[in-house]
Image (tube, rainbow, N blue to C red):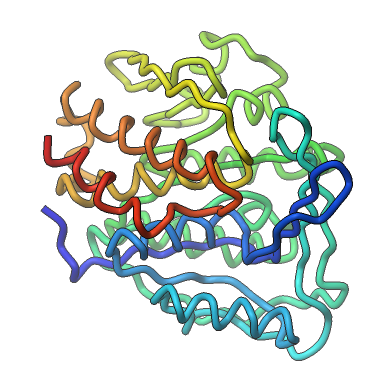
Length: 315
């Protein structure tokens, strides 16, 4: 069962999301892939901490207050005193899928992170551009390797955007290293098409294995989720819904994976012992958390839905 002495750490960029539909702003809230995951996990009662850098401006303080309200430890955040907070404009199409426009901090300096030392069975979740950002890559790489060697459970989501396609050749070694030092990688079929130039499942699994990947959970929008393990490939049906917004859906999916792993008491050295029943619970939890987020403009699971997620793991 869950050990509250073990913490879940999230490493990733923090942004402020503004949603547009039919070219009109409709919602705004704190975001960023890892922040979204940490909020969902905190609402599910997990002890979480976020590692990031932020600007100390009005938007930054708004996000800071939001983290406190959701009981997220932000003591590992590095605060810049110059620049502007990152913004992400999400333009939703008729299918509620988003096209993004990002505004950076303007004042980019290497953050003086105070990385925590992770203990065995702590969990590290990381991904997106922050995990491959050239400016801080040496810091991220050292922290990742140390956490893995210390026995932390490492989960990675590349969440690679088309807007970064021009730097793919430079950062591909970083993505591959992240996969190598992660116990589980969660990726979308879109990630794989951009990164590895293929949508063929067999080819994706072959590449993943060749670079040292261990377990790959592959999401494919409305198609079944695929799970690649060293011994078997599983398939899991997803829910048929009409989404309000798909922003944060993949993040909620990742949070569901982490939550189920923690509640089921799975350790890094026992992943190979997970049977089909447990994988079913893990993936079903992830699908349900993702579905809940798709039905709102929120990037994280609604607080009134927590009991429904908990119930999945008790069956």
